[in-house]
Length: 471
Image 1 (tube, one colour):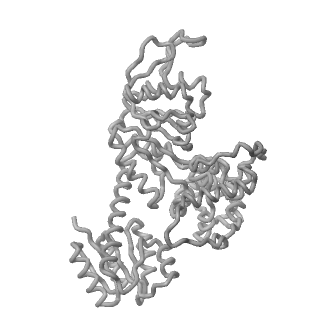
Image 2 (image 1 turned 90 degrees about the vertical axis):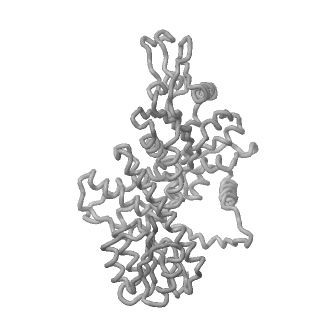
Image 3 (image 1 turned 45 degrees about the vertical axis):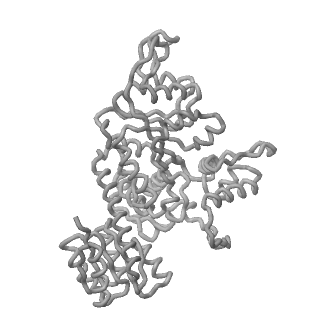
């Protein structure tokens, strides 16, 4: 089906030229001279994209954009303007525009922006279809957001779900690793079979083997009956191994055998048993670095990472924060019996300015705290925790000089980590507090970049407090 585009501009010549260029490229085009006329069209049909002038008599392009976002939040809008200022571009993007074009509009640039906007919308629709196909009780609705960083991961997850391949999810604590794993399972061919989870870091190492593989009666003192392990319980379905990086080396050998041959050996059993499970593993650690340190088996790593998924932390998809705030606010006020409580729009910026070291889980907990403890009919600035109201040093005070040949963001992050650690003599708690992240997030990023404490530095004497929010 051909994509349809609504062109809105009070200049008849601009409408004619734009319509001609788009129709020559194969699009169906409807053109109108005002924002009022555009709204009338939108009441009757839904185009694939809206291309609107910024400054028009009556309803402006920004106002039209805001009305579209209120009624059709998924509909992409591209703004055109002859006033190519930074301010108008920022205003358009903040209001939710997909992109911004400056008049006179270059034909190639127009077609490129339209093509990208429509391609991204197809991705949004595919992810929405995946969400709708899942039973909501499994929590996939908590993976809220439409940022490119999140959508690209969910799109890969949607494709991976249709296969039997092993998946390795890498993400910080609180980002929703298990929700993603459940979504993959319940959109797979195994969705009518069990989804079994086990946290490899939450079970004592001496008990982990029997929890995973089970045992036979009489295999050790206290084994008075046969016990089925988590792997056997997941037979035909999916086994989710959370924090796989905490698994002891001796158990990694048995996990490799499970993946390679579909066999497990129960504690005390005379011979192996056959099982059919799909493995989804997750970790907040850098398994590649652990392979180099010989604390994680290289062969197991490559068996697990057939399809690697990197779930972005909340600070890397800040544009999703307003949607998440509203989602958790509505859900929480219903949960605690305060359906009439109001969260003013102007307070959202305080949530966006915080880095959320505990990610989505921390945001959810903070929203619940605010809803429960606020006393009036409307949330006020004083109801927000101190760390949300805290002023931070503006980034522009750093006097960053960007070289013309480009620069590596990964290298900048590594350098900032090293400088903060040196500044505080490798005290991780103090360095994390200085960088406004949690200690866990600091350790995660140190592992990511292969940063290790120099052997000549004294042992760390942390004060025991995590500088970030709840994990």
